[in-house]
Length: 185
Image: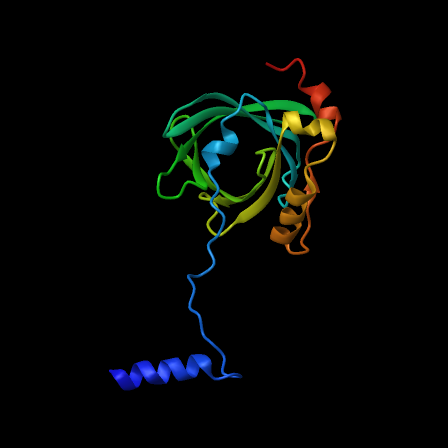
């Protein structure tokens, strides 16, 4: 026992011998989907990797509880205004994600926060399809009140580019979207 203590003391004191310090593995930032979507603000999809032909897409909360959110997704498809009522279910053990279902509980996708701005103004969301196994996309989503800057925070844009990894990204939002949906309740 004394030999081990002496040896470890000598190794610590000998110059040129690296000292190994074991630290806990790097922890990922803790994001909560509920925190981002809990707003009366519209949340716009600013950019996406999905080329589905929709523009001016946003989510508008109707109600929220500890376990779920009811909201409407509104968008333009071939210049026609569309609306889909949706429900998002939150998970205590995976607070960064939400399962999206139709109001009749048909599962559609899982949305996972990959980045959330400190002021909650924007987020990068990975959308994993349940109906089309293996298909996923990335969205850059922005709260309406932060669009007074005209663009999402640089930090959000940087995280979105990193998630896309050089792939194609499509603009979904433009300033005209505000006018198009101004009268749409």
